[in-house]
Image (cartoon, rainbow, N blue to C red; front, side):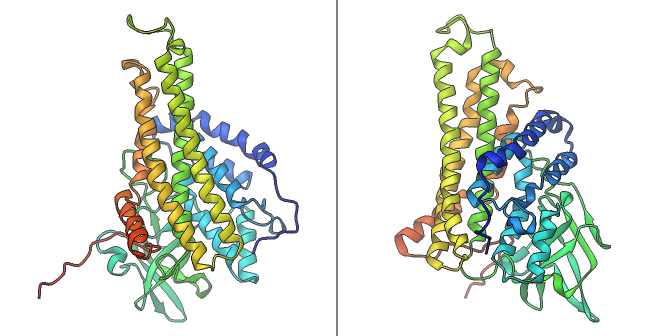
Length: 405
């Protein structure tokens, strides 16, 4: 449980700390995209101001921010650099797990570590069968300890992290394992080849005889049966990224139009910024930004209530999952449309490589496919029509073919 004795931190307090850092990060976004330079330095700036400790209670060295405040800042960080909130997605979920854990030495250790700048990445998804059948990554007994062996894909953020939260199979059960990123036997690769979100460090991680002490085995972890806050929470981080992309795309579009003097012989005004059609499109982009942000924060409010109550009420957990799923369908369509329409503002010059305005659509399209919206839409419909359970825990992998009888 988070502390309620300290004075709640205000949005203004948080903005005073983080907005200048976000502005510094935003200043190099286009150059990083062109050079494909991973933002190690920028992650260091976030460490310095303890961004990862937003939700850590004040008594443990954090800011004690609410869920809504966290997601508000994730949107603004995504507007500065959309890769970074995605890279920190599992970190914030890990922090939330510690907040929900029973008070004790282990909980306090990790909360204080996060307050000191520690970041947690992930290594969950696997190639091939993956966790649809069972994890091929195995945790096996070796004397008095354990060793971890396996290969993971889409290890988002782990190259920036101090620890990696890995999912593994231990004697037929799923477990979460917290591994030091620099432990012997850990090899990480920046081989993510998607056309968007290129700087998330979503590459391959290999574990070869990595020693794991007993206290680093965290239990069932993601994929455990039953309702959980985590699926909706992790989805909402993706949606915060989309809302931030829309915010930056709108701002870039306004700046581009404001400075533009070239128009067309059949334009309604001499200057593009005075053209009513251009004004209308800027208005639409601003509406997309507003609605995406408002939708994310509305779900964050639901999350706030459920987490404050301990995340044990099944009705509340279902409400979070449904709200996040419905928001996914709305925000994806809104942001993809906006990042496509902005190109109607100009002619060939708006697609210049140096502007990299295409990164907004590429990043939005990439972040949108992580949890397929068509599958989520069907699950929502089945739930509302037939009372089917929402898919709290799901994984990607090959499904064994059904044998005909």
